[in-house]
Amino acid sequence: MNRKKAGILVLIIAAAGALTVGVIRMHAANNKTDKTGETAYVDLVSNLADTGSLGTNNYYAGTVETQETWSVNKNTDAEVKDLKVAVGQEVKKGDALFTYDTTKYQQDLEQANIDLQRLNNEYTSMGQTISQLTKEKASASASEQADYTIRIQEQQLSQQQKQLDIQSKQQDIRKLQDNINNATVTSQMDGVVKSINDGTSASSDGTDTSYITIIKTGDYRVKGTVNEQNVGTLSEGTPVIVHSRVDDSKTWKGTINKIDTENTVSSNNDYGYSGASSSGGTNYPFYVQLENSDGLMLGQHVYMQTDTGSKVDKSKGIWIGSYMVDQSDEKHPFVWAAGKNGKLEKREVKLGESDDTTGEVQITEGITMEDSLAI
Figure 1: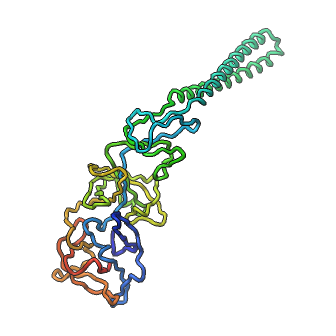
Figure 2: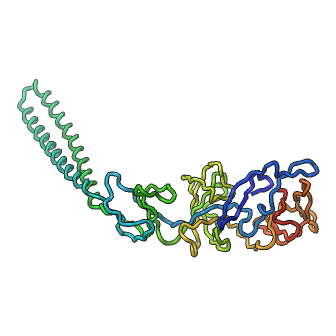
Figure 3: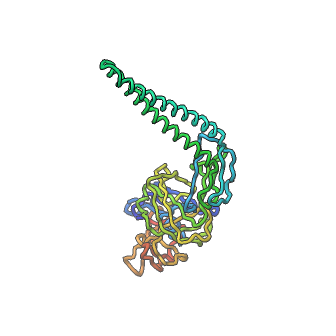
């Protein structure tokens, strides 16, 4: 992000053991005017600095989820007779989830068989009528031939329609028989029952309308969210670092393996990320394949950053973008800081290490986190 051109600044606040990321716009009250009378935008060093955990990269909220889910929708034409599982219950592939009440299916099947027998009888009767008309036509006078031909053709058309009715009824019978034979629905995977939407309770996020959803046990992945302004900065194959929201010393590595621009998700201000749209913009999900998921828990909230490959330890000193430091005089580098008189002033600083990967430099003396620098 080029902070020289930025009109939107990212404010990252750690509170109550959780990370809340918001977006603020610089107001005139934050502007400082130097001796030339030109307006310069400033921001707190605490917002600009890379402390070794948050940094200047965009951070994206994420949730740990399983690699695969399986959902089953309830047949709206039947009632569930026996629900055999509960939310949170572990199931194995082939375990019974619920059983339909087949009473209605049985009744419908009996009626369908009666209807099929009637249709077959009508079809046979039409065939007999055609045979009889054909015989009569053979001995009819020339003036009666045309009439017999029309009557035969009408019977043939009616017989063709009856044949279609028979096929449709046979299909209905097969469906009813399948419903009876498969009245017990079983799980297609080993997993845990995530939600049961039985009309009295909905899924935790309110979006899954399936009757039962099973989440597969095993390796995890991370689902993140990116808005339409920033989606172009991510690409499949990009390495990322996943951070625990509770303990930033815990990290996991992974790779973005899917950016789903075909579907959208609602924004969540509680777990936002830098550059997030808080005005109802379009947001897309993306998924991170982890190298390992040891120590992660299903449903755990995390945050992610793209992995720049930097190996520099940034736990000491203040790290800011090198573009904010004037190094034209190598012996006396300085930054433009907001003075007490509301004007910018040169503030000489002492430099430490630099990180060419991220374009940052370490400040060991000269500024504090409470100072404001021109951006």
